[in-house]
Amino acid sequence: MEYSFEQAKIIGGIGADDEYWRSLSRGEFRLSRCAVCKGWMWPAHFRCAQCGAWELEWVEVEPRGTVFTWTRSWYAFDRVKERAEDVPYVTALVELAHAGGARVLGMFEGPDEVIRIGAPVRGEIRPPTAKSKNYPSIVWVPDPAVARAPWGGAAP
Amino acid sequence: MSQFRGKTAIVGIGQTPYYKRGASPDPELKLALRAIVAACEDAGIDPRDVDGFVSYASERNDAQKLVSALGTREVRFASLAWVHGGGIPGALGIAASAIIAGQAEIVAVYRSMAESSHQRLRVAVAQNDTAAQYLVNGLESPAQILALRAQRMLEADGVPHAAMRAMAKAAYYHARNNPRAYGRNTVLDDETYDNARLIAEPYNLFDCSRENDGACAILVVSAARARNLAKTPAYILATPMGMLAGGGALEENIKPYGGAGQIGVARRLWAESGYGPKDVNVLQVYQNMTMMGIGSLIDHGFCTPETAGEILQFENLIAPHGKLPMNTSGGDLAEGFIHGMGLVAEAVRQLRGESCNQVPGAKLSLMTGGPGDTMSSTGLFGTFETL
Ligand SMILES: [Zn+2]
Image (cartoon, each protein chain N blue to C red):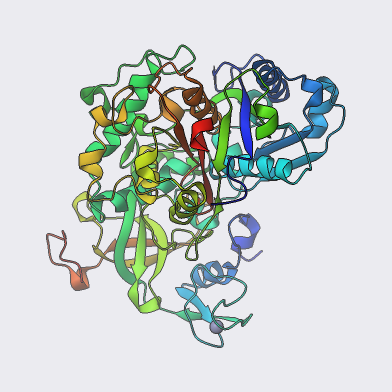
């Protein structure tokens, strides 16, 4: 049977983002915007509050942005215990200016000194694993294209 | 000022002991009954006369399960406030509104939690409604999700880490005098805080609320009825619930991002009550995590990110003589955590003069609802002379 994230589907939140996960499983990073007025909408929702349209479109965008905030988890909580061996691990919330300022969560892989608010990162798409709850995922890594150390405050 | 202001009062408080999570000798339903009956005894009200039942979040012990043990003559009103701890003052507002509208006369507002008869408390509190974006990326607990918020407030907004430490120390300091407090034996000094085990940066163990088994209930009646009862009434001045545009279940895309999501309700609290931050004598600040308590204080106008370091110093936060005495029972961090409901009881005790860390002559008592959800609520209570 072909892989689908829906086999492990997590019910929670708004729940209009199936196409995000479907895209990732095809190796594409797509975010949503209104099909009529083209306004970015993230997370995806069922209706555009700006123009009232009910249709979304999923646009392939470059997974590149800056760290908006982050945390390093030192404890494997019950519902994410698959990551116990990775503790401490870092999760980053990344802002994508070219997609309406959408902020997208992902794991961060890189040196400790890099993870600062404003640090430039790019996303790598990873296949589903138990750790990612059998969902495909985006992992944020330092972006060498705009690298200039130290990162502190020098982000674009 | 609103038609709601001062029309009702809290006249009874009842609490079971705080048990270690999973260690309650009684199941949740029995704890709820014990708390409601204790609130009735405190108020001098026959439990059979309670005709309204209100709770919030994922409370499962609804009126149907309670009435036959209470001997309830008639249930006339029952309701639940949405969200999590953010709904607590909102639940009081529902109770007060029902009384003002003539739908009920004596309303119990309560919360009961026991891990043994349910599931892991933090999972129960999350109501199994956590978006895939979080779980896929290693985030499950409010501690982790609100750590994202805290890190932004530290690194981008400029709130100093020392303010978090002061909030934790004040809670544990007050717990020392509270025989009910689960954390009463912990001496939290700077060194202990600084060396504590990290949970999710920037939070360590002492930044996070406890998880306890237990129940807490309060009784709301009309102001007219309150005047003839045993205890000094704590009049309900305002309990606004809601959120502003830019909030919602937005997976960290809320605007503004820092703070507690209480800017709108705080503005309404001051407008509806006719008071402001400078008038408040004592505060019970819901702290699932220290930085979120700071967010509530910022949203309510007690400080700004820029002044947080100067204002939120330990000496300012403690009873009896601090300028901003808060969490005088030990609060969610150090007294115990029945999903924040213990804060209501302490807000009332301060107005009665019954707190174990009494602020002398306290007349205006604030209780902020759970921060972090962008829908929240906040409550201001006062003595007769504040009406
Ligand atoms: Zn539109």
